[in-house]
Length: 265
Image (cartoon, rainbow, N blue to C red; front, top):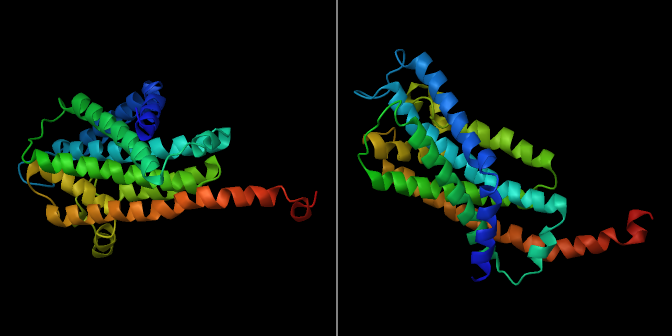
């Protein structure tokens, strides 16, 4: 195996060895969401004609699970490597930033899709949504997982401790997920929150993904596709300087820390 393939294999093994925590637990969480919201709102909310609320909810929960777990995979791997001190062994390898990106984002896509497939398989008997356009499902599933894997990679490079990573997860990823139309159509929101939702890239991923099941969506799937593709490209452009900082800035910072005149020792 080449360098990026070895790193990719290592990252897949890392989450698969604790599969109950990384794959089974998110599936159980999605089942609880579906049972609670579906039971409470089934007869009270009608989003699309001829589509039950439980069927409407299922694609949103699948995509939410994909996004959250893709982000968690790359971000947790990097922050754990930083805290445990074994990141230096990866930095010593002759791997380019492209190899890092492909390996970490690729493993995040694998975990995200594994969780999403598990959620769909387990919850399918609650409601059997049709598959009107499977290509939209595949496109938005892959791009959504890749985007959140890249964001997790950037967050992992930026964070220095678990507290900073938790803040990123709780104050950015979770609110954007909850305000993206997983549990409702954004057309039911007031005008201000509708406008805010249209600035949320998570909305376009979930709306385009749901389009593949029902053939209807809140916005054009081509608009969603363009927005998500642009976000993936932006994440790549953002990752490159972050990776360069790790290589170029980290050794310089270590020399400053070792300078007794600067640190007062």
